[in-house]
Length: 335
Image 1 (cartoon, one colour):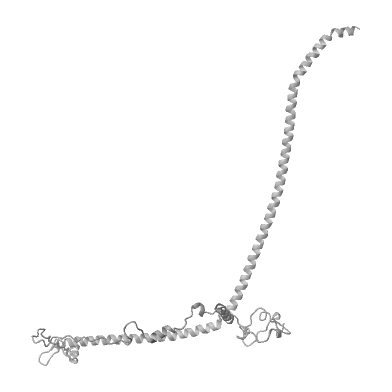
Image 2 (spheres, rainbow, N blue to C red; image 1 turned 135 degrees about the vertical axis):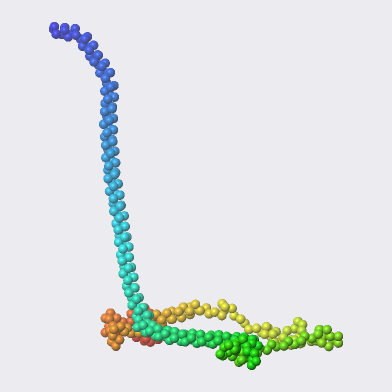
């Protein structure tokens, strides 16, 4: 009972204290709410940022894997193309080498024969020596002819000078300048003067006196002569033969009419035939070393039934008029 009384006496104090605590809790609730909001916001933000980071890293990994796959596929294509180009270049180089060797062999064998070329050069050298000797002889002959002409001109000039100065010749009474009495014998010019005749100038005819009172020396004008009559009549008339030729002039064809329509094809056929004749060689192959031994054909070119017609029957045209291929009909040839 005493406890109850004591509690009853302390009720107001307890209520007042609880009321104060309640007010303090109410005042602290907003701060706690704001703090809880901040904690939740920070947690949710950190969780969202970590998730976004995870997504970015995952996207980066996916993009990296995809780009690596595309790069490897593109690289494989590049490697494949480069390998193909290398193979093509290698094959082209080998084919070029084979073609070069074959063309060199063909040219040396059928176009430029070494032995015939050597014989031709030897003959050409001999011919050149002959021509050179003949040219030297011809040059000597020309020099001799020119020397003779010069000597003849000089002799003619000396003779003319001697005839011109013939008055300097010595006489029995008076010696000339080329025959000095103080010399044992006369000079060479003295003998030349003795061997030629003096130069005689033509006398000019005296001119007649232009004045003639009798008028006998005057040249009288000659009477005018009429021009000869032309053969064809004068006026707007022409020769009947010219008129006939012009009237019945033959027909002149133009270049287009005179040229055949098949001229181009005929020219092409002629060109093909000429190329066929000059390019191919149907003679039997003869080895270089053994001229007397006949060439043995290979196995893939002959058979027990005869020569295979590949290359002559299926891949070449037949010109029967040129007798390039045998005259056997196609149905009779062995296949």
